[in-house]
Amino acid sequence: MNTHLKLSTFLALIVLGFFAYPRAASAQPYVTAAAGVSGSNIDCGTFPSCERTGVAFNVTGGYRLARWFAGEAVYLDFGDSRKSSNFSEDTMKTSGVGGGVAFHGHAGSWTVTARAGAARAAAERVVSVGQVKFDGVTFSDVAPYAGVGLSYRFTSYVALTFGFDAMRSRWERSDGQGWTWMATAATAGVTIGR
Image 1 (tube, rainbow, N blue to C red):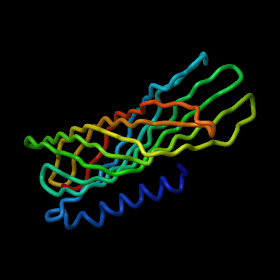
Image 2: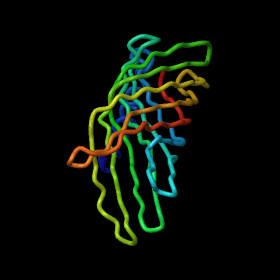
Image 3: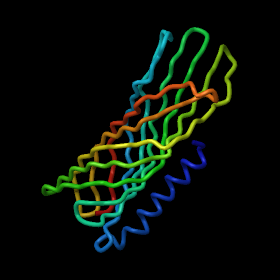
């Protein structure tokens, strides 16, 4: 997924949150921005060095239809996984844009959230051999995602949020051969809205 699309999605969700903020008492929209660590179970094959963790972030915009149920739009960035040897490096970048539903359970200032949906997942592969870096090739498909979260509400509009999200990711060559793996992210962030 290109940088322009990522930035546009991020800004659109932030604008949604700010426009929705004054009407939050009746409409109950919310926006969450979070960052943390990503991981993947990508197969490293015969590469002697394999980094399966990276930096993750996500942005979620939601609209509560009831106190316990919401529709959500999400942007998930699971960072990079990198396989390398003395002469080559193979990097996979995973991200997705999608939508789904979220179920919220409340206990005082605490909220537990479970979410699921589908995302247009993009996996970009960049290969370097020696000093030569080949352009990235992106494979996109529709993939399921799911996540859980725990929030502590400081005010009626601001909460500290911890989450764990997972999405299936796949990259294929034109001949149909490729890899499938699970990308995960453990994040902390802020939720604005109800």
